[in-house]
Image 1 (cartoon, helix red, strand yellow):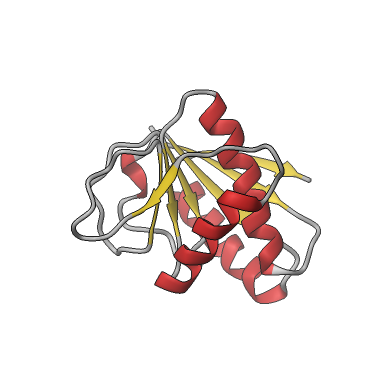
Image 2 (cartoon, one colour):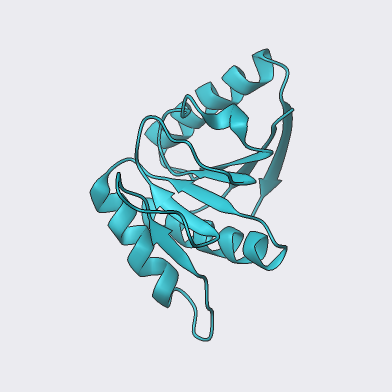
Length: 141
């Protein structure tokens, strides 16, 4: 069954969630995982693509963006589709909703910050997972 980890940052900026996603991606990649980063839009997908190249000096995270014609070659893929067919171990959800395909992953990572609207939506996602019996873990940063 899928395990869900909520990482709670004290920051109020959504850009901090993206930096946290980069740190988690780097760690998961070093552990040999294949990762799918789910974003809200093409613009957010591009932001993550850019950020993964420069978030930390000396870091190398091989990744690619997902589109209809791209063959998956990198261990980290970024996309925003409502439906995907991809083999990966970890889903990092940067969206505000739970992707319908979340259960195909071993682990789901939800990133929460102190923005009141986003925090409220994260509580709803937590309740969704809890009510369906998923293993939940919270990490305060």
